[in-house]
Image (cartoon, rainbow, N blue to C red; front, side):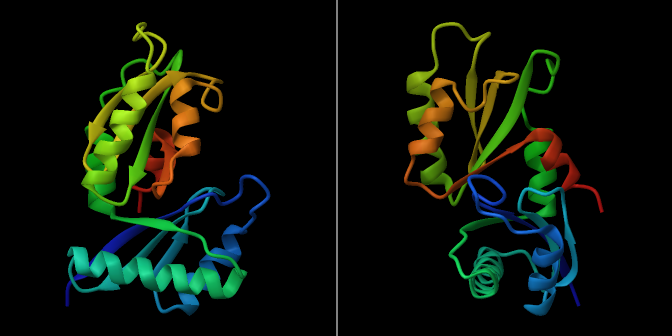
Length: 183
């Protein structure tokens, strides 16, 4: 039987007073019937395995099951985004902002679908200044790549757009996404 490795990216965990310990998240997902559960860093990331393929329907099922388990265990709705581990690898490999890691950080702002990614990219691109050395964005597959100076990811114009969006998004730096590729 085919199995698929999924990356679960919880939104807003371990920031702003919402704390879910990695050990508790791992136990929650294992109790929900996911196999080979592993948490990655302390920022609401997990890898799980399911039997079956990697269709959009399968991703929706994984998301629904994981969100329900987290909600029941921790008493709060925590939106999450799901990608296959292969999709994570592809997204990292396609990141256009890997060359200059000395002054800037590369982030991936993940969205639910392509229309959400396009809408978010449009809003982000509208606030990027005339100096591309400061901040840049590029549209990816169900995500937006974002490049900003180190130490400024909470105060740039683009960060303010992501903080105010009503879209379901979650932001991860490229280093975290690389860790989700290891297994």
